[in-house]
Amino acid sequence: MSDLATITRAPARGMITLRGDLANAKIKKAVKAAVGQAIPASGQFSGKGDTGVAWMSPDELLLMVPYAGVADAIAALEKTLAKAHYLVADVSDARAVFTVAGDGARDVLARLFPVDVHADSFGAGQVRRTRLAQVAAAFWMHDGGFDVVCFRSVADYAQGVLTRAATTGQKTGFFA
Image (cartoon, rainbow, N blue to C red; front, top):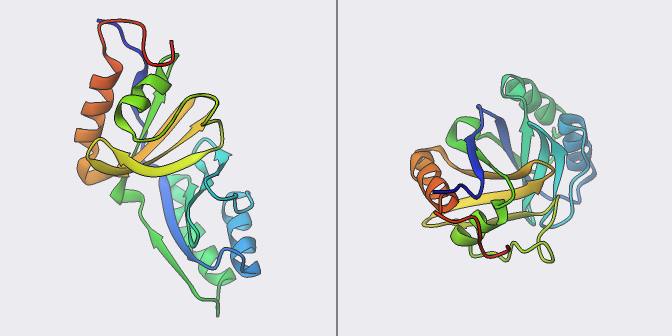
């Protein structure tokens, strides 16, 4: 058996859902202060490592910060957003993150996500909120591969299907 990609469960990552009017100047300022990134365009991810921001919907962002810094980030967001209409929620312990890396990473995702992940259609900095086999998930591409986020309650299932999709018995895949 050959592995198309390496599946790694990432250590706990601080994740904060922020909902509100993404055009609001206070929200823009709060996001920049929290993660050092501007609000990304629709379907985009900005950041590196365990710090960044993913566009999730027209009124929702997923902010990522170091796990130990979540409480401070939320306090700073709430201070900056005082008197604005918003929702901030710590979802760190409700989510799991996997990294899919290697030459066949796109093949692994193509087997599980109803998304065109060909290099002509999906590149670094793009994010999709979709389904991973039978569960809700999101993923984005970065220099080291893809990060996949799902609910922690289905993390073992997600890791299993990712691992099975990466182990094929042959080195070729959809994009070989």
